[in-house]
Length: 391
Ligand code: F3S
Image 1: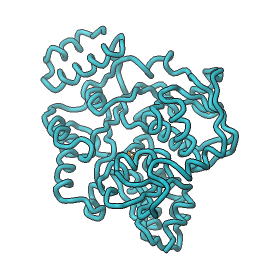
Image 2: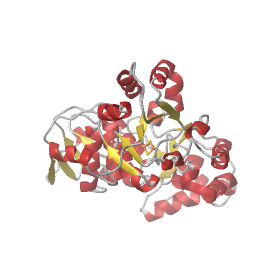
Image 3: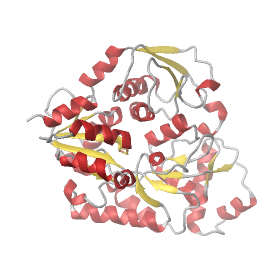
Image 4: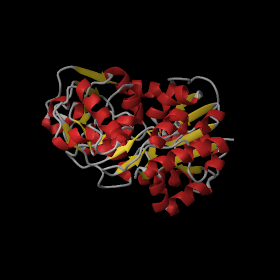
């Protein structure tokens, strides 16, 4: 891989050990994937934040790094709400370790916004055509597909290395030739809301890491596209998709000949089946995977208006969205539902004390049984609220 004279100097340790390690990681990735060079990036989104997932080894690695990030960088959700962690039932010991991780990232100049929806917080992290290095799978899918920016599926160390150098290796989805669709997915019904998460749940299992091109009967909103992409990235490994007439790069391509059809009945089946489903009453109903947008909070506030929940209900969102919308948060909380920031129902150990989680997200439905060790049931947003209000 070609390196500029300055990059060679960094590789030789002239900018210190942290930058040397970071560029070594980028060069190693570039060599594996046959990149020709490093390219400048606009931002990074760094996974590897929850103490539940990175443990002491991760904390030690981040704490040993010295220096500052070279581009705007934002964190993935942590293992707890950084303010209301006691209300989540998080232990003092976990909280201390989690705060140490946050402190270590802060020392590197990373913004302490822990969210998988950075595009809903800042407008300038990624625009059409920008190269970025993001590492949470739903954020990657959104950046590539809905924004039209370009990112590979970065691991936590790869994204942090890219943040420190301000560059990433030029391969994969950074290149035009890898962004063309491989398979046409025709859908025979009109969908809304969580149906897109259920569609993504099925489509991801069918296409693996291919680039699907959807021909839909209804026009999804940005939140619905986000749910579709998040679920496909979880049940498969889809990092980029196109939707005919909707996503920004779709009109560059012809629909692929290789085609599959997904029927309405298959979507309905996701609501009835899936990992861990089949027995057990939900004792936790959780919204906000990916983190709730303002429109989603407004919908929940409307559905909960004047009512009291009878079960534990969590709404996960980013701290910035919570702070900017106090009236919506108040209306949700008045029902007894809890609003948590900086974390989510999957990456926090707080969910593990429940038996069965009901979600309106295809991604959470896929991950909850494996990562939280509890049952998962998926339903529409309205059905989830109905369940929350039942005695
Ligand atoms: Fe975000 Fe957690 Fe879901 S990181 S996409 S809310 S699993």
